[in-house]
Length: 68
Image 1 (spheres, helix red, strand yellow):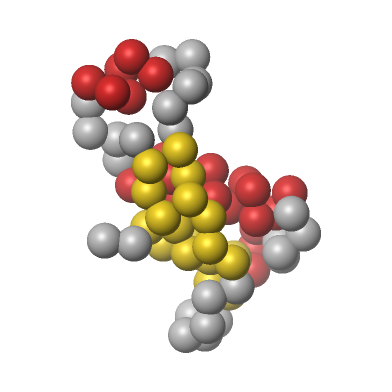
Image 2 (cartoon, rainbow, N blue to C red):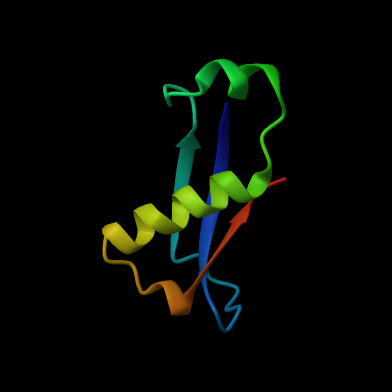
């Protein structure tokens, strides 16, 4: 299951800091992911983790939003 997630700064600037395509398949629970609808927050948390790892900002300064 894939979703596009945009990363913004906390001041809700209209500019996107970074965009990720998050794929949650291949995890240890991929059978459950394929059977059940995954909550958008799981994609947002993974995108935030990647943004912090990539040096886009700090947890306190970033917000992730799944595209609808």
